[in-house]
Image (cartoon, rainbow, N blue to C red; front, side):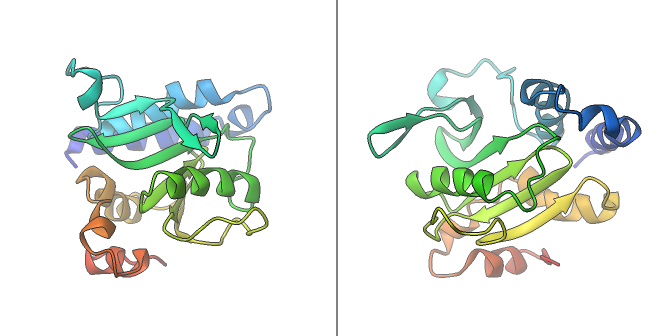
Length: 197
């Protein structure tokens, strides 16, 4: 991650921290969270969230509200992150007023998206928190929010710690589970030098 991108993330986190009471009010919505924090965060991590490169639909890095069949219904994960047109992970966004650490419903939603698309990982975030789930484990409606969660970060973590763990996303290496399907997701993270504690 270059210095400018790191500074962008630091600036986002500092702005969020300085106005957290405002952002955690119920009137601050998911769209605002996505545009003001989540989009710039993933742009700084190297993803072309707004298709600035002008790629054809089939080759965009990120598809917003990607259509996904789950049973007879069509659902739309907030973000589908792709490499070469192939889905790598979904990201489901929530507004900061929604506490995701213990939100079983939100965890089930993002895990069901990942499971249905046969993706190894998916992410749930409200910007204040980021939860990464192993989506190879079948989601069950009454699972608690921590079930199959392999990584949990808060915006208040030190930047060195955050930078180290999120370099995995920058380098587009969430496909490690595809490369090693017999390893569990935790082992794959550790193999690449990322402690989950």
